[in-house]
Length: 314
Image 1: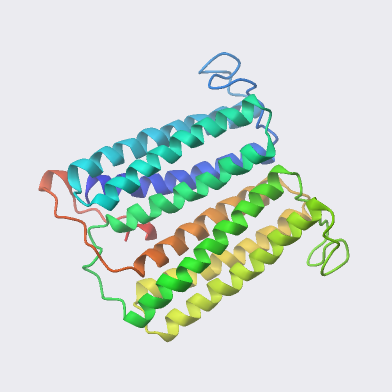
Image 2: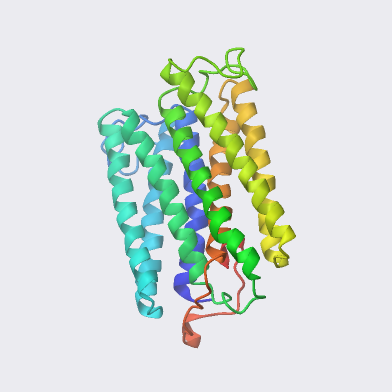
């Protein structure tokens, strides 16, 4: 496995963990447990207790991602001569730099809604980019069973539509979270007792749009899986599509639990992780829809025989 591919695989998994941790920070109201930035109470090694534990751990894990992805980017310039891989890796580094800046601004300016929402949204964009790099640099890409053109078309079009819908729903979800609209509709499946609530209230409208977008995304993911099964897609493609259906249904369940438990830490945090995992899976499917461009052969000292431990690997 080429070193840069391995780095991108680990970056995807690391980002999933970071998103989950960030959700725990917000759900436990630890976002301002460290009132300064980049230090925490003037120290890079504060007492790791209470909210400081979650907030500073989030910062440390974010710093680890920058180092990890930076190494993967460097290795991509050494081992991969494809221009798009190098440009995408550099773009990923730029995203991480902006992410770090937005993270600091959320603390300095006391959690402004626009900055906090942008911070989470950019994290999802980076996750999708890292996933594309993971698939594109896989040494197994192009050597697996060919995907029929009909299935490839479904992946390219509907896989992309599903990924975009999940991303949009995640951005709206970030807005719901950071504007404290999570309990604007305290009942489910109705909202304040109505199927279509009055939308003049911005918090109710934001929450309701998040629910509607979630339903649309669920239908598209199920439709994508059905289309792939009908088109005779290879087993690995069908399995991942069915896995996405399972995740999107779990997401709906976690969304319901988030409301019925009045935003308890566990369901809310898992809801964010589920959205990130679903986006990753759909990005893999959409990327498989584009023509194969196998990664270049690398020297023996930069590869090994280990198989990736994640579906995103190829």
